[in-house]
Structure formats: C-alpha cells, structure tokens
Image 1: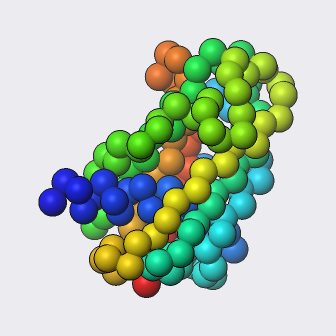
Image 2: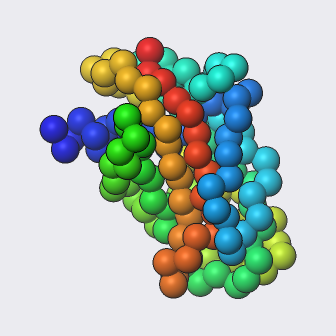
Length: 146
C-alpha cells in the first residue's frame, strides 16, 4: 500500500498549468512562473503512460546552501508524504547550490506516469526547503490521473 502512495506522489509532483496553482506559504522565496506539461482547466490531467514535466521559476529571499524537494499528496483531506528518488533539488534539476539571494532560478523535474497507476484525484503539495528546513517555496497543485 505504501508503494501505491509513493508512486502517486511522485507522479503528482509534475502537474498541468492552465488551472490555479496556489502558493501555500512560500516564506524564504518568491515563486515566479510555474510551467506544467499536462492539460486541464480546473486540475492537472495526467495521462497514464506519458511523461510529465514541472518547471518553477523562483527567487530566494535569503542565501541558500542546500535545497530539498518534499512532496505530499492530499487525498480526501489526508496528507500522505511521498519520498522522492532524488530529493536534493540542487542536482539534476537545472540549478546548483548555493543559491544567492535575489537571483532568479529555474527548477525542473520530470516524471513518467505509468499505465498501472490508479485513476485518482489529489492535491499535490510541493515544498522546497532550505538547509534549516524552512519553506523556500510551497505550492498546491490540483491533479487527477486518467
């Protein structure tokens, strides 16, 4: 059962754009443009057996030595943590740490939506935490697998 939630969480990290992506408490950074590779007017429609990409533009409000990506899926009101294969947001993401206050950075992640994933609706909570575990960024993404 835990693998199911892990898989769903990894998939939902990358969601569509064209629907409201909400900031959920970015404290140490300013979220800029968010680009997502799935479609939908009110939620990200993730097609099974396809690749999904998310790109976030952001500006740190403080110098950052390390950055960790954390994902939670909120399913029927319950937050479920999803450990990522590589939570180090400073590797293989288009950015390198340390990050300088006031500079603009573009973070990118790619995921494959397997055909075996269940059809489910979820709100994805994506956080980027600094070396002190403070939220640099936090966003909520409404999504559904089809």
